[in-house]
Length: 190
Image (cartoon, rainbow, N blue to C red; front, side, top):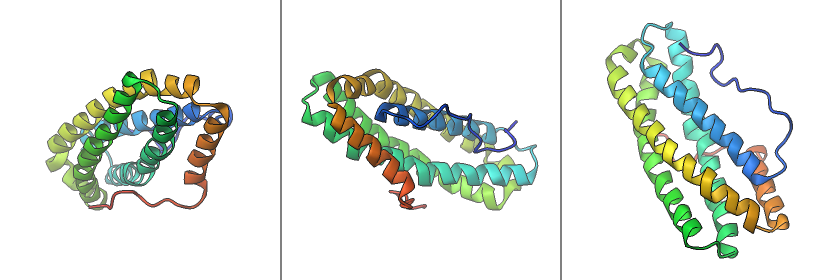
């Protein structure tokens, strides 16, 4: 049904040394929590505590942590790539990435309202299961294409085109967003 600890992740082999490694770790967390969202929608027979904890974990990740990743891409990756004039394919991928972020945020806003209800009233999951599942499927679908474009087009462009000094600065910015205590979501909980 659910892992015992929703937020548990495999131990990594060390700190990322490239921004694309840090971003790829974020992608693994996105995939993990997308799977949890799908599982939650179909787990109305789980214990109320596990349901509530899972919904709360989904809210924490998608409303607090994911916006940091979006900022990594929009505030660190995009400007550095545009500086080196990466070509039409990469520029189109960057445009799609930004548009995807808006679409993803819209789905998460709708899901967050449902997760908030389930977190406080876990027995409501049975009544919300179909809507949660439909919206979680939509989110997973958006992420599937979004992550693929980033991993196949944007990440290789960063590694090949962005100078090492700029990549180091990008990595520092990514780390700073998580370590500076700035954990505010870029979108309010609605």
